[in-house]
Length: 344
Image 1 (tube, one colour):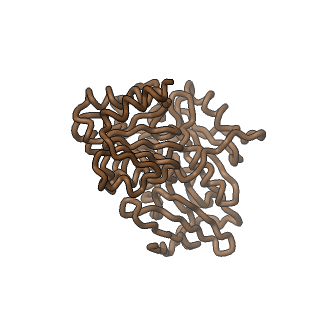
Image 2 (cartoon, rainbow, N blue to C red):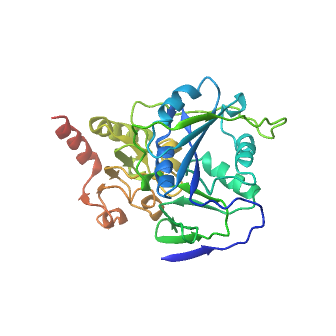
Image 3 (cartoon, helix red, strand yellow):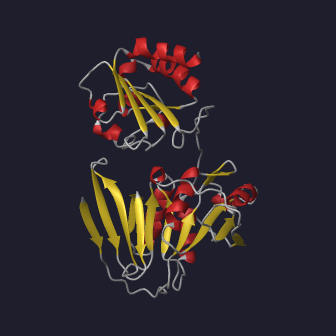
């Protein structure tokens, strides 16, 4: 285990909180809270103090999101800011709002978010603006109130080592992003959080403009939160074979479809389906690796799955070293037979 200690002295006039008070950035899409943000809320609750949520968006899209968020377990207060400039969460437009909330005498001791593509652009920017460090992609968190220090663990070297990072009391506000697969999503609670509206911070001349967002539509579960995942690798030859082989199996299992980087680079699948160090990190109940050799970068994205099933005709494929169930066979014979059996 590698251990790193963050020690730095700050002279800014932040208030010293008696107990932790976390500000959690809650993301949403199409009127629903992201599951990853609910995992970040669970991590914030483990600090042992108050938890305040922050949601931004337009006035039209916020009401259903607030209705869902106010019942999330562990949330004490819910702040929301409505403005057309928050229709898409750009770092340049949201950072000034964070700076205002985290100004001197701020009650917040921690700022938390999921390790999403959006938030991992926003939180480090805010931390840099405040001259504070940030810890990314954490898998555990523990706060020691007596020393006012927070200890995190996070995977490094494609998950082959775990780094332990301690943020000492000299760091007045501790920023961190959360690996969603390491924390369960916050469940609905009986009590409701207090909702408070705050003013947006206008940006006169933003340096960045959102042009468009392209989303891949699918009737299957979202890859990042699916309980079952069927993934294919380079052995599937081409995009047509990839789809014809994996889609029937995914359909009968009610599973999401994933892919190795080799399959994505070869054009077999969209890059939104990539599982691995440079793709999505998943931890489903069932992960089926079909025609995937098991490069270390791919293993980093799926090795925390509860049950790993590997099908590969190479008996020496690295994937078999971590698989719970391994089958050395021709996938073109085995997968159709498996689909037929499952349909029965």
